[in-house]
Image 1: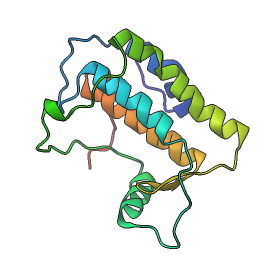
Image 2: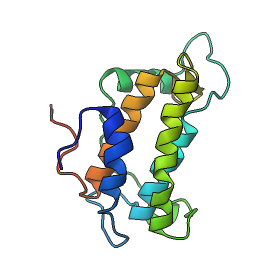
Image 3: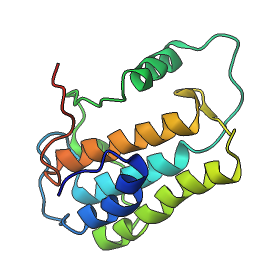
Length: 162
C-alpha cells in the first residue's frame, strides 16, 4: 500500500484498512507494546490531545518548547530505548484487539469534528502546549505511521533519514 501524503485520507481511510492486517500475535520491531496496547494508545492519545486543559502561561515551559520544536520539524518520532518493562504497560481497556480497533475511527473522527465545529479552536495541555488543527493533524498522521511501522504494517515511516 502506498501511504497517502494527504493526512486526512491517511487517517480516515487508510488507518482502518491498515489495521485489518494487525494481529494479536504480531511482535513489534522495537518497543514493548503489544498490538492491542498500540491500538489503545493511539486511540487514547488521539482523544486526549483534542482538549483544552487550562490556558497557556506567559512563557512556554521546557516540555512545551520541545513539542513546538518537534511539530515545527515535522513531528518525526524516534524510538528511544528505556528501562521500562512489559510490567509498565497500561492495563488494557478493551476485551480484544478487534474491539480496540473498532474504536479508532471514532477517535480520528473526533479530531476532524472538533475543528470543523470550531475552526479557530486550539488545543492545550501543560505538557504539549497549544496546538492548532494543522499541528494536531500532523502530530497524529506521524504518530499513527510511527506505530504502524513499529509493527511492520507499513514499510517505511519517513523518507529523510538525516
